Length: 117
Image (cartoon, rainbow, N blue to C red):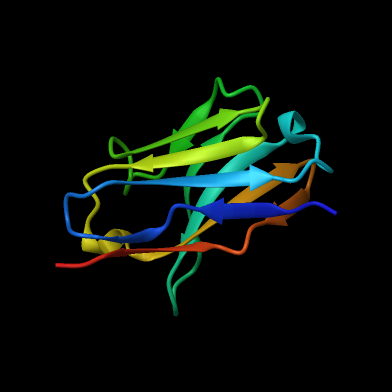
């Protein structure tokens, strides 16, 4: 059974930093998959914030996080991370890890990030 488990969420003040991590279970050919971080808030469509290709050479970011967030992966450890700096209140959301391969998608349970003044 494939599982993605996020960790690293929390509460910070504006300008603060957090590092999210997502670990995949062994029953998962991790290096086949494009890995993504999404975020969601009640009443709004889930937003794709960052994506990294299977070999880690290609990364893309939404305009809202470009220059502040960095996605990375370690295929040997089957993990993907999202380093977030200069966090702002509008970054408050539940952050989800997602794996995609040829139309197959897996999701984690999400981790809450709160940026408060």
